[in-house]
Image (cartoon, rainbow, N blue to C red; front, side, top):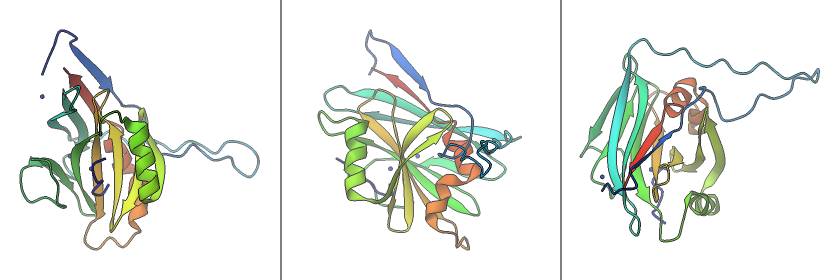
Length: 204
C-alpha cells in the first residue's frame, strides 16, 4: 500500500465509462445526536451554495492489472479559495507528477491519488490506515463516504476513486495563525461543502 502522506488534489474500451457522482447534502460526518429530552436534535443546516462557485478537475490514471483513467472533480468558492493543478511547489513530497493545491486564510490542502496493491480494495486500504495511523475514523459528506486519519501536523481524507483500483487523498493543514487542533478541519462547513461535491468519472 502506498504510504499515505497526509493522509493523499487516462484507456477506453467497449465497456464504456462509469460515472460515479458522489454528492449530496453538505454537512459533517456524524448523524445528529439526540437531545436530553429524547428528541432528535435539529440536523445541521447545509451551507449556502457559494455565489462564485467554480470546479476543479484533476485527471489521472491508476490501476495495474485493470488500468483506468479517472476524472476527479470538486466545486469550491472562488471568492474564498485559490485552487490550481500544479506540477511543482507541493505542500508535501509525493510520487505523483501533479497535485491539486487549494488554500484560504484558515487552511490549505493537497489532493493527489494513489494505487491499491494487487488484490486490494478501499476496505483493505482503510484497514491498513486504521492499523498504521492515529485518529482514524469514517467520514461522510452527503453521498461521499471515506476515511480520515492523522499524520504529523496534518489530517488526511481519503475516498475511493469510483470502481477504479485507486483512491483520492486530501492532506489538510492549518493556515498560518489558525491555532485550532488540526483534527477539527474535517468538521468545518467549508471543508464539508467541498468534499460533498467530489465526483469521480472512470473510463477504461
